[in-house]
Image (cartoon, rainbow, N blue to C red; front, top):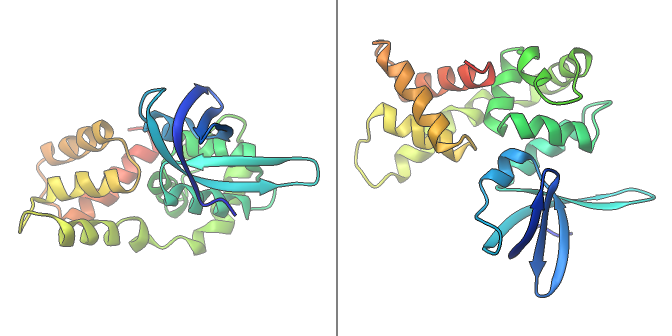
Length: 205
């Protein structure tokens, strides 16, 4: 099993990258969100991989972190969801956002993925809702960041932003959403800010 690859990004297009590892070019299909987190072509990158083996094909899928593989596997466990659909979903929703969409029964958020209709989205929610731990998607991330933070007591906003980034959200998106929530004046804990931010991002608010 290939757990990850580390090499030079030789090429990329809308479907994935070619990673040069010791002179061997590995074609790795990736969600567009994960590709956006990689450095420029010609730079070294580490990509966590999932090897998909079929009777007539062997294909590598890559992710910027292990949470991507986790949710890719979860999606593949859903009846009727293949690699193409799973990749499309993770191209528009970070793992944390997908978890929030499943927990909140948000069919529209999942349907933003190309080629994914309401019937498949509803099946994903139905089959995965009981397997998604809300604490895993929100509370634990916030507490883990707070425990590891260099500052003794980071503000709720800063902790929430960093926890969202750790969950796969882009820094700009995390900051913009948290600032908008805080500007509304309600006094919220870090956990509540994260939950509300995930809800808004999954809905495209």
